[in-house]
Length: 283
Image (cartoon, rainbow, N blue to C red; front, top):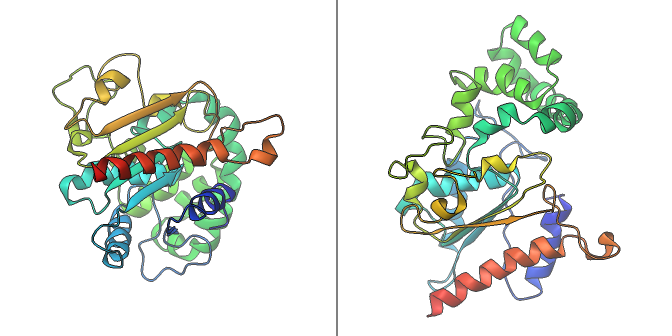
């Protein structure tokens, strides 16, 4: 991976004797695509296949712990919830992701500021560039025109991902990619918790309340089932929520000169969770 925060975690944890395996999502970076199944955020079978492959290389006592950042956090959250007892991981942590991405449709801060800044790269590099031939094969000319006019990532999802993969609409796509997308938004029904109640492994969610890209409402609420005190009691009580007042998106800068510390706080938070899981297994 070329992501600096992934390199930071790899560097810090490998010094402690951990083995780090980085999964690159299909088609990203220089990975080729065979067939028509390009990357989208609701696909979880790649994670399961990769986890099973890594597990075959482990000794019986070695734990396999998954960590996802941003979109990776969304995917791993969805995977852990949907797979239930069939999950191939021993524990998982989601950093700056989301449990219910339907809230992103109305997150004005991201729609107004960040999404327009990111949409050109997303559309130009992947949808029109690397996967352009595949998208042009499945989308009509009018749909491609609307895609080129898109000003938000939500618009790209609507014009490209939804149409290409056969989803009904953006709400359907966001529901399918979310660990809590199978229950009504802002539900107050504490009995009907949906698939998040199937989480069978220790699962930690780390999110900053000031995240400018992924609103905190995707992981928590002031009331109802997504209130942290209710969320952590779903299922067998395997879900843990860590919300911080600041930190941004995959950030948490610290120190007088943050560039010296880099992603220490975030990487150490992940490391602390891993250590806690290992100690609990020993006991």
